[in-house]
Image (cartoon, rainbow over all chains, first blue to last red; front, side, top):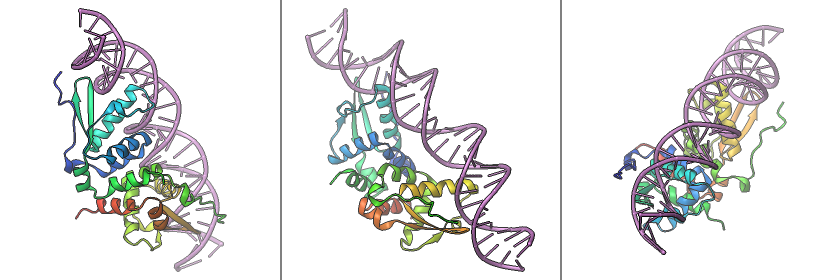
Length: 106
Length: 106
DNA sequence: CTCAAGGTACGTCACTCATCGTACCTTCGG
DNA sequence: CCGAAGGTACGATGAGTGACGTACCTTGAG
């Protein structure tokens, strides 16, 4: 099956409400915050050890992707993920940084 | 007779997830953004002309209050509302500003 | 080749949420 | 005093959500 099935919204289409909804979930926020630690690094989805079932993880990957928070690349039996830092910072300057900072203890 | 039935969380109890959920709704976000324009101004809830029924408005007032976004003061048959700017900026520096900026078209 | 591992698709389920209507309470203006 | 206006309480409802299990697909390791 050809890839390309992964639908990503264009930067201009990213909706603030969808972004905030996506970030409201603790698991998804954790993922985004971890990605924001190294904004240019592509990470394997599987490297986030979320304590939920596989299909639930797939659900969260989709929510993050369709909200425009992350860019995902299908590599056969693996899925790579990268924060859309540039797009997000252009559309919503400082938002991800604020959420990341607020999510850090201390 | 108001017996202070309005429950407000302490600043330390404000949960980021609840704040983001509250901000994810367009109507509530609009209210918060408008309040953020004049952070020290107390406004009448009725001054926000939301196109929903009374009971729905009451619902949103409660969500905003219980998330810790606003402080509400009962004045008999009126309800005053003020953004909890200091608490929010201490807990989540820059968050409200980022959301407000992102919500402005311009 | 075989099979384990990562992901997806689909159906389900319980719960939440935004909305509404109606009834009721509280104040203020006539 | 009476009624209008702002809010609340309660119940109902339809949509959405996060979770699960199972079946299936794709790839790389053995």
